[in-house]
Length: 150
Image (cartoon, rainbow, N blue to C red; front, top):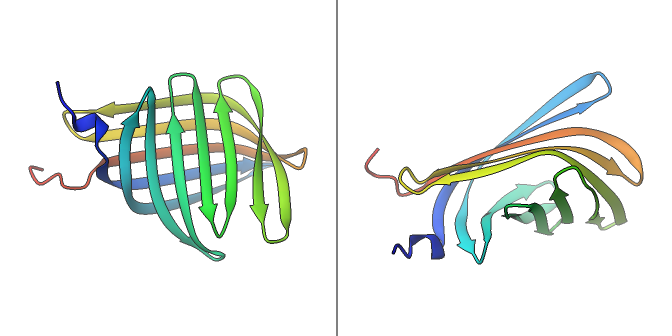
């Protein structure tokens, strides 16, 4: 039995976010280095990123039925996901806390132990302070960083 899944694996992460709001579409891309691990029945992807506000640590937690994005540091955010459910989250800034809401339309995650590659795909409608902010498509791919046999 492999203990590989229990340990934290260093990974290279590519995050692509498409936001559709009104008639416009914006795309944001980020490459980061982080960690991937499995704990209990959940899979975790963690990485740090520099934002205008300062350093932010992002944790993405996925299970078979739920997802959660947590951000801490210069920005504090909690964004929950569950298929076809409206859930409430929050976004905390130095100026106050904003209520956020998600309605998840698609949530898929997979990891291939052989190749050391995985992906997370979440499509959701986002509301901020009760107003529609847009439809967000979060596409994350990651691969084991010490993939020397490639």
